[in-house]
Image (cartoon, rainbow, N blue to C red; front, top):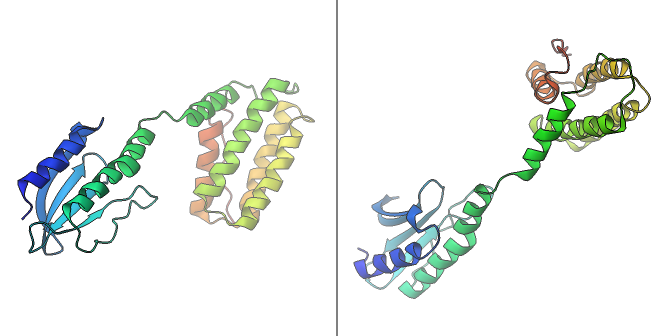
Length: 227
C-alpha cells in the first residue's frame, strides 16, 4: 500500500503547477504488482509508484518526453524523498515542456500554407514569364515538395541527392521559361523522377498525392506512370 500522506504530497505538488487540473491518480495492477499511477490526462505520461513490504521504501518508473515516450526502467528501492524529487523533475522536465510544445502554434506550417496558397494563384496556362515574386513563391513550394518527398517516401541519402539535383533544374527553369513551358517541364520531370527512384505503384501514387496537395489547383495532373 501507499500511505495517503504520500499520495497527498504528490497531489499537492501536481496541483501547484499550471497544469494541475490535468493530473489524476489511480491504483491498478502493473505486471502483477500493485501500482499507483499518477497520470497526466490527454498525454502519454505516467509516473508509477510501486510499494514494497516497507511502508517507507518504494520503486518507481516514469514516462520520458522523447521520440518514443518510453517508460523508464523501474528503479531500485528508494525513500519517499527520492520519489518526490523525481516526481517534481518529471513534471518540470518532461510534462511541462511537452504541453508547452503541443499548445504552441506551428508558425512554419502557417507560413508554408500561406506561401503555397499564393502559389495556387499563379496562372500556369499563361505564356508570360514569371515575376520575381512568383519565382520566390514557386521555389518555396518546391522546397516543401523536396522535404515532403524525402520524409514521406523514406528516401535514402543517394535518392535525396538525386531529387535535389532534379528539382534544382526545375528551379533554374523558372527564370528562363514562360509559365506554360515551365509547367510542362515540371510534369515531365516528375514522371522522370518516378523512373529514377524506381518507385512502385503505391509510392508513385503517394508522390502524386503530395504534389497535388501542394499544387492541386495548378492543373489536372495525369495518372502516375510507375515502372
